[in-house]
Amino acid sequence: MEKRAELYRGKAKSVYTTDDPERLILHFRNDTSAFDGEKIEQLERKGIVNNKFNAFIMQKLEEAGIPTQHDKIIADDECLVKNLDMMPVECVIRNIATGSLVRRLGVEDGMDLIPATFEFFLKNDELHDPMINDYHIKTFGWANEDEIEKMKALTFQVNDILSKLFKDANMILVDYKLEFGRYNGEVLLGDEFTPDGCRLWDIDTREKLDKDRFRQGLGGVVEAYEEVAHRLGVDLD
Ligand code: CDP
Image 1: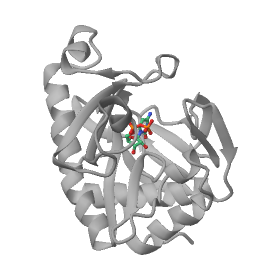
Image 2 (image 1 turned 180 degrees about the vertical axis):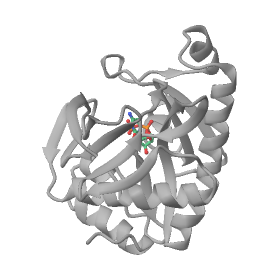
Image 3 (image 1 turned 45 degrees about the vertical axis):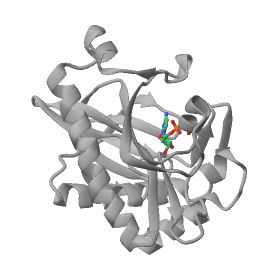
């Protein structure tokens, strides 16, 4: 597989074209950003940890029947993926209230959410990823009704699979964000699943083991990601 031009440079990953129009390369960089890119730092080893973590999670999801864009790891910090037509929406599920939900609704930080809540956000940094609903998505043509239902169903299935996976490793999956794309008429899970895009707490102490350590300046960010990987049995070598 030949790596060609940089197609897109996101805040933490770069996307490259390849000699196969059906395949792209995702490069996980060490860059770590928060607050719509206002805070950016390089965190040693993060690209490698996230690439291997993502591959592990995507494989678990595939085994459980979730179709994903992930093909295989091709370098320590790179993987090969299917070239999806991405839908510009973010799907967020929350099992515990924290972050923007608490700021928006004034509910108690740390309360259990039963049932888990689902939210759509528009992927648009300039507009600070505003919350949107199904009608906005249909009206503006970001996805059709079937695709909306599929994204919701898959995001909830991922919650069942990963909540159990993390619980068995002594962690709580607090909330997470997924992105989906189209491939041959099918809706596939795209982007990544890493501690950059979810919240994970230790089940006993509720210690934060995710990007909130970076957002809140708690330190030990990559060390926490490595701890999560270690608990799950991800091979980081
Ligand atoms: O992080 P913040 O409090 O601003 O947003 P949130 O709405 O509470 O985030 C919910 C979950 O989605 C968290 O796990 C975030 O890490 C994740 N998220 C993300 O990965 N990318 C975004 N653009 C927004 C949220």
